[in-house]
Image 1 (cartoon, rainbow, N blue to C red):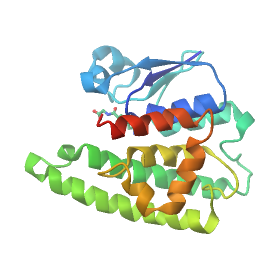
Image 2 (image 1 turned 30 degrees about the vertical axis):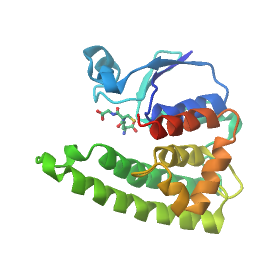
Image 3 (image 1 turned 180 degrees about the horizontal axis):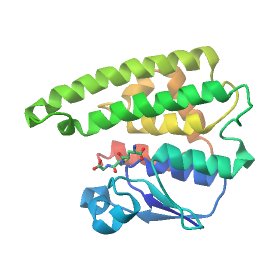
Image 4 (image 1 turned 60 degrees about the vertical axis):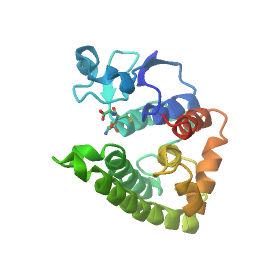
Length: 215
Ligand SMILES: N[C@@H](CCC(=O)N[C@@H](CS)C(=O)NCC(=O)O)C(=O)O
């Protein structure tokens, strides 16, 4: 059985959505980042970076990095075709959008939520957050444009891993969880479609509930 380490308001929700969507048995092992459980020596044996998620495969292989875990699962269990195969005409677009989500949406959200890590002066944190929101809005505007022209999903009519990953960052929101949904209607439509999926949807909805409750 796969062991997925994470839970709470963390990126493990996207990997959980993938595991559920492709119906692979797994166990979620709670690592409470508010209690610093990700910084323990024990957890760092799994991920020396001290970050969640981490995953252990049934064979005992340890994987870290949310996107790497997700692709590993989708390619190893390809029945749901969440990742276009190497010869698919959608492969190039898939890789483009995947790295965009990872390098822009993910990195900028991380800056927004941990602004103090980007300066040696903690007084800078507020302005760093404000800049991260602006940068994120610029990235979301690009994604919105793609979905308006080619949606409803990132790969047109084809639901894929991209939509799960994108929805994680919608669920996190900007300063206010509603901001992305209000400003970017095609992004919101795609997010709503993903949330309605009976298997992949609930972990993402749970993130949103926790964010709205202030966690
Ligand atoms: N690039 C990593 C980033 C992981 C990451 O930042 N995880 C967050 C939770 S979503 C975390 O562990 N935060 C605690 C911290 O940064 O100290 C990935 O995609 O897995």
